[in-house]
Length: 195
Image (cartoon, rainbow, N blue to C red; front, top):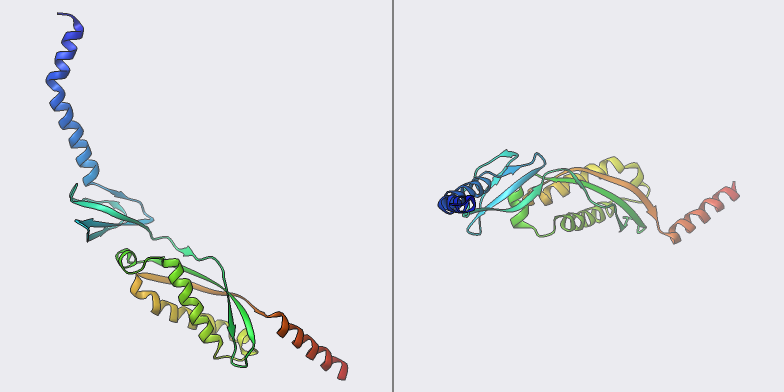
């Protein structure tokens, strides 16, 4: 019997064992997901939340449980946002803000809100406008630290149900609109001329 036939017979006889070995390897890989340090995985079983896997080696039931969402738990900075606000003394100002946040409860973030960044940005705009509306123009720069603290506290309260922690709020700049700036310069120049 030629050697080719011997090899073919050996493979045919062991094909079942080879298939079982491949199946075993696939089952092990599916049953033992490894989650990186910067992520958490949301596991669903038949479309329902089953668990959240933390960093490291985990175990799930293959083909029943599945990794539905891979969520980064790293701190994330929203793009700098500029919004208009009107002070108590009816001056239009432009506020530049920057928000830092991170996801602490992925199951809430996944199932309670669709677009996290947009929701936080919208929330910040409303809160900043409301807080600026409580101040006169002269108070805004002087109370910047208190304003940051208040905005952070209010944003944290609003996004807590989404499983998000606001780690930092920054008010980068407070600008006046062109007409107000020109009027203030005229008033300053008139004041200097009268002296």
